Amino acid sequence: MYYKFEKNRSMIFNPLIIVASELGIRDLSSEPPKPKEQVKAMVTAFRKVNDSGIGSVIVDGVSDEQVTELEGNGAYTVKTDMSEFGKDHNYRSKSGAERIAATVNKFDRYYTHDIVVAVPDDMPELKPYYMQALMYALSDSDVGIATMVSPLTDEERYDNEVVKARVDWNSDRIVYPLEGSKVGTLKDIRRNIDDFDTDDVYKLVPIHAWRRGPLDKLIELPPSDREFEEGTDLVRALDAGMRIDVTFVTDNMKVLITPEELDEAAYEIEG
Image 1 (cartoon, rainbow, N blue to C red):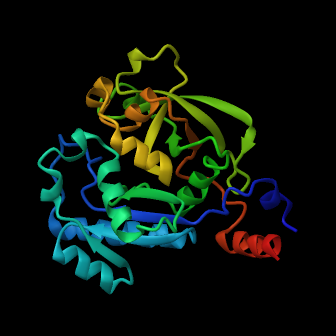
Image 2 (image 1 turned 180 degrees about the horizontal axis):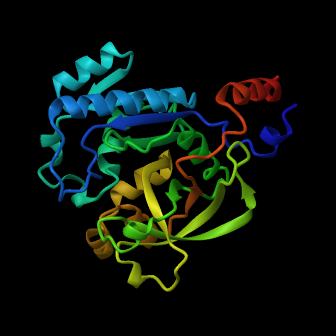
Image 3 (image 1 turned 30 degrees about the horizontal axis):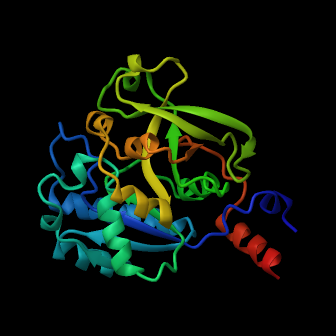
């Protein structure tokens, strides 16, 4: 028996991971990527997520070119007509909950998948183990939404384009497969670091996982006033009293347990 896996069975979910184009998290002050660059980014994101070995993966494209290229790389694809969401879809919110909910409810209307994960296509820092880490934030059944945070650089601390987070860390919640990782509860989200009452602040990683019930609830709620200011519908969830837990990740973490070892451990547990 793998003791470390037995200690935390947070990987025993049936997640659906959606790699989505134009999810809305790109810095709008920069130039949008060219079509070929965007397709290349989507292929890279799909491969990294697929390599994590966690859950089913689909790619949500917005053009025939994207869909054709991703299908050629082995991806199951769906196509979203962005005109359905209007020019300012999702209330200008950054995580794209409304769009993701629309995609998953078409693909999985019978709720076969209990967890939905949204991954943007324009995230070069994405690592396969991010998906593994994200599941640990959902190990407590009271958690409706999970995301990740990473260290802020000195430059990012005072960059209001960077969404920042305050976290209440739980010393009893350990991410066994990743050295140095930990889990806590999200307490506040701001862009301006001076709006926090502490210096212990982190960068919000724009990969979000929802349980299906909280996702359905979230998209039925109107956006909160702060959501427009901070640019993420996680603010809407916080203001509505939803519990959001986060996993701490960096770009150079040592993976202590591989997806293959997790599969073997899960087989032993179920057997």
